[in-house]
Length: 364
Image 1: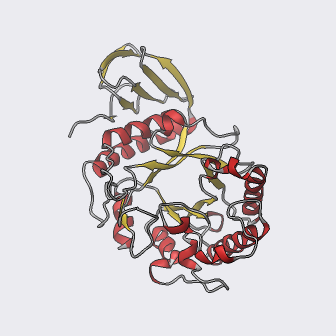
Image 2: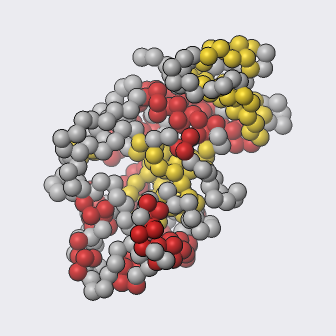
């Protein structure tokens, strides 16, 4: 199934596949008894991505959440004497470092990091730790500093990420997870770091007994376009392909079907209109990528709820994002002596600052 899924993702305009590493899947028993066979063959998975010309973000964790049993931590960790999970605690740090080093060593031995000519361009350590960091008192921040330093010492040759971690130490990049990072993300904590959105939730996890949470293709596209307009460098969809939690792998009360409302559903089938709408968005953004990468961004007010984000290059190349944040009414705006109608809650992309190539509120 992997080749087909990767091919559909590439056809949909993706450049990078982001994947977790599941510690309790790979080391279910203590004592270096690792399993990288079958669906746990992460090297084969990454090589397939590379073969299709895409890149990889490797989220090592090793705590991953992901609505996966025990957050990806192996059950046997609970029996380690004196252990305190995800804290400045020596037993936990020892086991965490061994596993992270094991994964990095595997990737290096197969030349899979971009620094070796491979597809892995980013790696992640820890996951959304800031949400519980204060619970550990002084040992929370010191654990963050240790985890970042430990990861950097592994010398992957590619940048490291920490999701939803405003205090991520240099050079580790703090990133945003959520529905609306174009609005909510405060940005990188250093001018030397890019603006990264590691989880753009295409729907949400499903809990038994609750109604399915849906998210429209238009809303997803709106926030992607807004994030890019505000100098965003990277957006990842969580999930782009839904999946199945087999056996008892799901976290408590989470259904077997996982993110079935994603652009590619649980069974590997394209789900419209999400897949097609986002494909058009990706193509439009890529058509002006050179300007976005090299030009200087400026912002102009077009009205009470309307704004223009303009990228003007030295050679007169120009790209504009015209944003209407009014949720109920369309707006007529004037930009560079031309009138434009902006549908409610939408972004119009003008690759040449003249013609609208894409609007996120397209009706289906």
